Length: 427
Ligand SMILES: Cc1cc2nc3c(=O)[nH]c(=O)nc-3n(C[C@H](O)[C@H](O)[C@H](O)COP(=O)(O)OP(=O)(O)OC[C@H]3O[C@@H](n4cnc5c(N)ncnc54)[C@H](O)[C@@H]3O)c2cc1C
Image (cartoon, rainbow, N blue to C red; front, side, top):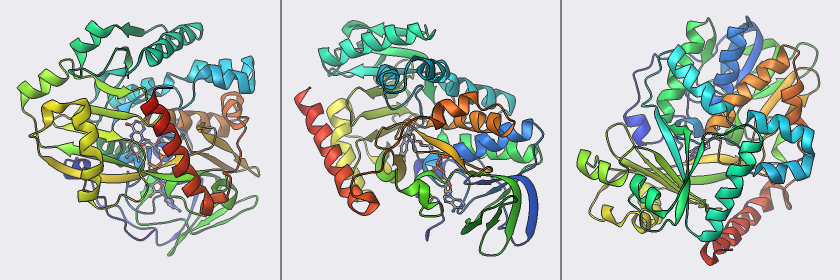
C-alpha cells in the first residue's frame, strides 16, 4: 500500500475530529491482534473488549481508510445472495442459522451508535426499488421468504406508494425496510474506534502487518514492531494484498465509485426523498443513493474497473444519477471518489480459521455495512468457544476465480458487463 491518506471524499471533508494515533514501534503482547481498522476489525475488537479480551488493532493507513470510510452509507440488511439460493446450496439447517442472522447487523449498528453515542447522521428506512414487473415479483417473493425466517418488518410499495417516498418515475414499485437506513460511514468507523479505545483497546495507524509468523503463539510483524498474540483476526478485506495467500485465491478486489453533489437545500432535498430513506434499485449492477446530513445527494452505481481520477468518476456516475433523478441536472458535483470491495464467486462472505488461532472474515461482495458488524460478533463468539454461528458462515463453499487474480480481474469485469447487459434487457 503506498498512499495512506483518506481519498478526497465528502466523508473525509466532513469527518468528526480524531486524535492522532501512533505507529507501532515496539514489541507488544496482547490476547487478540486485529489486522485492519474497517468495520470488520473494529466490530470484532469491540465485541472482544466487551468480553474481557485484551485487543491490539494494526491499521496500515488510518481508521476507516478502506471501504468502511468510503461506502454509500446504506444500511442494507441480509447478504449479496438471496436466502433461497443459499438454502439450495447448503441445506435447510445452515440456511436457517444464516437467515436468522440476516437482519442482525443493522441492529448491532444501532446498538453501537446508542451505547457509544456515535455522531454519524443515522437515519432509519431503506427502499429497494423495482425497475420492472419481474423485479417487483422478485421483491414479493423475497418478502414472503424473509417472513418464513421471522423477519416481518418489510413493506411492499406499489407504484403510487413508491412515488411518495422517492421522486423517480422509473420505478414500478418497491419494498421498504425500516430496519435498513443510512449513516455517515467514516464517522461510524471513527466513533467505533473511539469506543474501542474507551474500553482499553489500542489502535496503531500507519502500521501495516507485513508478515505473520504462524504457530502456537503467533506474531504479527510491522515495519517497526511486532505483536505477539493468542489469536489473530485478519480483517484487511480488499486492501489485504497477499499477506495471507490462502485468502487471495478465492476473492477479487473490485473498484466502485461514488459522487456527492453540492448541498441541495431543504426544499429540493425533501422533494426528492421526503422521508429521507435511502434507495437502491434491484439491478445486479445496482444504483444507490441517499441524502447526507447536510442535504447533499450521495450516488453510487455499478462496478467500473480503472476509474481513478475524480473527473473520470463524475463522467461515469453523473449520467446514472441524472437518469434516475433528472431534477438534478443543474446541480454541481462537489466530490467523486473510488473504493475497493472484495468479491467472491458465490458473492457470500469468506469466513474461517487457519490453524488454531488465525481467524478471518472478508469478501461480502458489496453489501457489507451490516454484515461486517455481524461478522465482528460472530468472530468474537468463536474466540470465546461458541462457534455454531461462525461455522454456519465458515461452512459456505468457496471456489477460486477462473484465471486467478491476474486473469480473474478481466473475467470479473466481463461478468459485470454480462450482468449489466442482463439488467438492460430486463431478464
Ligand atoms: C465505494 C463503495 C461503496 C459501498 N457502498 C456500500 C453501501 O452503501 N452499503 C453496504 O452495505 N456496503 C457498501 N460497500 C461495501 C462495504 O463498505 C464493505 O463491505 C465494508 O466496509 C468492508 O469492511 P471491512 O472492514 O471488511 O474492510 P475495509 O473497510 O476495506 O477495511 C480494511 C482495512 O484493513 C486495512 N488493511 C489492509 N491490509 C492491512 C495490513 N496488511 N495491515 C494492517 N491493515 C491492513 C486497510 O487499510 C483498511 O483500513 C461499499 C464499498 C465501496 C468500496
